[in-house]
Image (cartoon, rainbow, N blue to C red; front, side, top):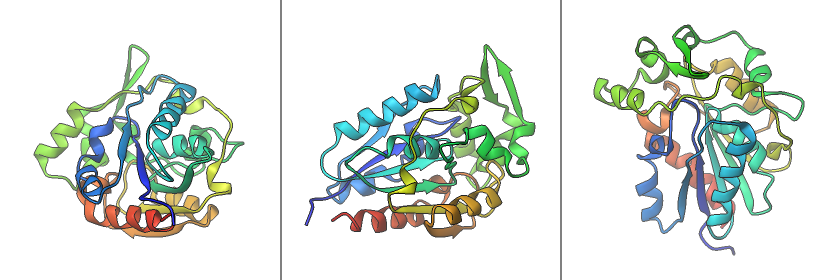
Length: 227
């Protein structure tokens, strides 16, 4: 049997590693090595490199967890030979012939995209859109999410690098049925295409913040397959 699986977490747009703050202590308490990639959303290649370095940093078999755009990152970085399982949280999961934008645009746009602005070649989430991003959180937590909303470079979703881990590795997918950032139909189609073990939660785009215990259960189930 392998040792405890390590957990590497990849955040999405308008976020940083703190979006996993409700997951990390519980996973650490189980004796797991946990590391959140802090990528800058400057380029897809650079963000994938950050996730790969995080994988290299932790021991043993790895469960790679991606939220939102982080799903694109774990799809690419997950080809690493020590990654044994992938967990997608309301996430993108493009194939090799798709950019993130093409993958997202295959389904109708979601409400959050009416609340964006571009400044200094970065895409910012307006305060008016925070309810479409994390509307099932208390207002104070929504304000914290907005204050830590790391803006991506404007063309990030049009960039491409090779790699598709979900074609070869077992995957789990959490669908947020009330998601107003990634279309829930897009999420369900992604999960079906990758033949993922799928869990649907009555949540916004951020179930790791609004329903952390349910998300932890999925991560633990993925980890058990490596131990």
